[in-house]
Length: 351
Image 1 (cartoon, rainbow, N blue to C red):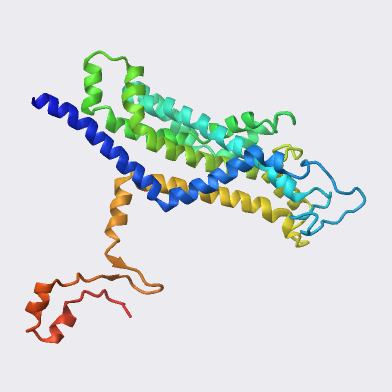
Image 2 (cartoon, helix red, strand yellow; image 1 turned 90 degrees about the horizontal axis):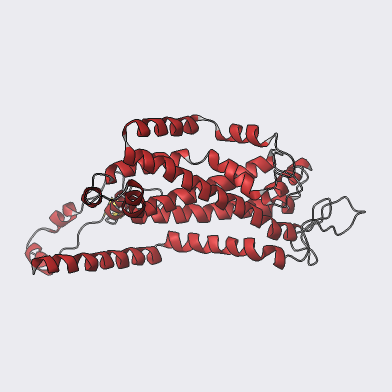
């Protein structure tokens, strides 16, 4: 009877834990706001070129050499080559998103191969794979990308899958270190030891027992790599490494910089793509912070420990005094009122 009780209690406990985690996800404002921003830009990446009034290379006129400010005809204005800024913004999001997500997927695969394998195997395998990860961790990523991509033909510098894969080469090492540390803590757990005793093969133990417990960390690492990929791709575009003919937010900023749009105060030329990059990065960062708060007990405990502290703008935080109950009020009615004032804990510096 006791065996049956244990067997039925564990699934019920897992179901309760799953419902509790799902409730935290839906109630987290960071995850809700971050996911909404990400979905908006995914929609732009998929349907942006279709919704754009013109193609990215369309020119309103060949005779004018002045950038037109926003108007009823051109909502976000034009650049000096008379390209419609709104059309370029809507068309440029797809390449940026594809490159960032390809970089995140490839870097996550490399992180699993190196980090989880090193943590589970241990010994010489761990030392060799850790040395390789440390080498990539110490290399300057942007410099390596410039050295790798500069000799490529112009046709390959606008290939999103090639660019994303090259960016991933400089982004997987940190995730591999984190996964290795977590795998070292998981490989001695009872359920992993049980799978090892009954003769399960190592690849199956890693895939079936280790990886499911690393999914929150993998999700956080993936989002961090996507943010890194967006930033690096924009920087490579501004530096002129990416083919200028490729319609992207980075090439738009690079064209505006080359034409001195900042000096001539043509803000409508560079502000829209810069805002898109910033908003997308903020959305992904909020999503990452929200996931970290759910899966990291230390962050939750620090957040919970601040509930009793009342913060005031520009002042020292004050600890709230517990409200006395009715019996305490009756007992304290006979005391001097001056003693009550001394009972409220107030931090030094409160005004």
